[in-house]
Picture (tube, rainbow, N blue to C red):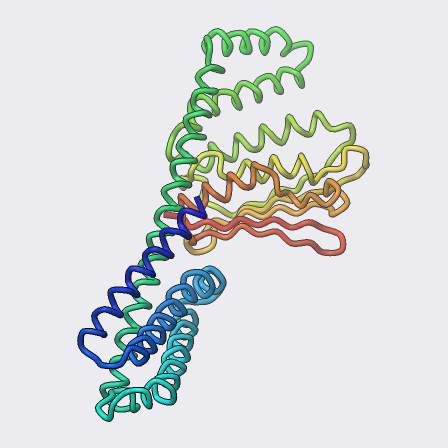
Length: 336
């Protein structure tokens, strides 16, 4: 595919160069003079288009503010125009007749600026098309995965009422003799009901999402061979609506990679805060719990980041960091 794209680009540039040369040759005299003009023009066009599309945009756009990025692109544009002006004035101008426009006059300046600006517009359009195609591919992949998840969910929903009725019967059977086991059965029932009834929705109440997470944490703590102290802090309106299963991958990742099952007296903390129009979810665990330097780069977090990009574009933040003792994960999403 890449070879085909390179071939198409080469053919496109070759055709455009040939048409440009023929157009100038019909109006100007001197083959070397026309060839030099064509080479200078297309060199600046290619430098601007590929410089923006393959270097400036992917390297600086995600990291710089809008004003700083525009200033960087403007500086790059000015440098290319100045280089082209110098080449045309010092080398190409003397090759032409006395009526040449390459004399740093007004016509020369306008010609170079406008033609280079046209190339910059093409570069911006190419990047826009490329980003749109990439976004459509991500959306298609997400829809495919969602369809697979829904299919798997449908398979798992075989006789759901029978399953829940059975869990309820188990709950009442063991409640008097084993109340702790009965509570776990109730938690498991709530988790499965959440998967079946709430997760397919576009938005759920934050209270429902948090109840699901608390049940998951309670069941996971039972599975661990040693007690784990988990501090939970929250300052948030539980009535706000959020996409389902958005916080869960981080909690799941905590138990997969942040808890050392062979270590006693471990601690972890979860914090959920609402500041202005943002929801901030923070997890902190002891660094030795990291599973041999994996730094939580599993498929779950990759899928989460893709989902966040589809939901919020660039208006979210998902970052991790380490100190000497702790591993830090923070997710910030806008509240719409």
